[in-house]
Image 1 (cartoon, rainbow, N blue to C red):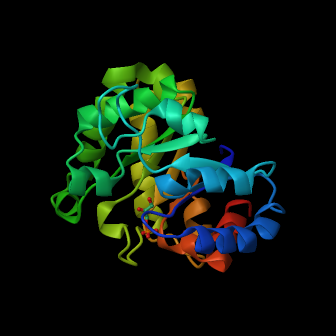
Image 2: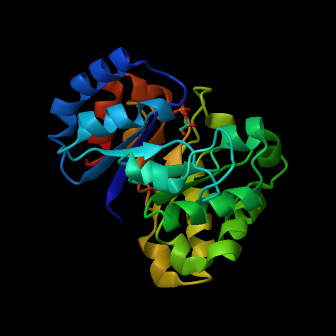
Image 3: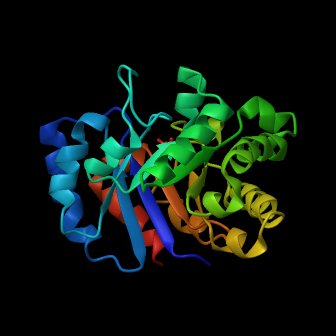
Length: 251
Ligand code: 13P
């Protein structure tokens, strides 16, 4: 089993004041948890605030998105270098909300993955199927093709420098979690697809599960052989829940 990683995705929530209160409530407990890397992805405008608040702590900062471009006339975009400059260690790429609401394509996601690596960030590649795709029996095919787009762009050696998060679209923000068995099946499939390129690298890559992870289901999910931690949305906005989830990862 790989070292555990738990990432909070705050999505579009927070203010300077609420962020400071949440970090205040989290830090004493998170600092005491051994053996789990924790990262927090606030909205872009608060990256500097979070970097300041988390300086000299074990908790890392990540971005929820990244431009596929290095620099230039791309109004409203934020480059990997800027994110690194703001103290980010991670960048989410291809979150399903970006794919479905903002039309991000597999090709764009692959470029974002590479842009993050180029800036010295750890990309967190999000993959997931819709409920229709699952009901049609296409889960593995969908995940496989999302993965292949990035593998074809960067190759297995670079892909293995990132993290992969399996987030079934139907489980995000719905309260309906994949069962530990459903999640493990897809995680195993992801590892098999990677192992076909390089078994040793595939074994070492961190695979996170995301989608309605709560304090009462985290332990069972994290106990699965191919689940190395979680990407947490709603429950990461509540200090007690998020601490319990991080604790479940070190159990
Ligand atoms: P929820 O935990 O709110 O379902 O969100 C999951 C997610 O999208 C994390 O990136």
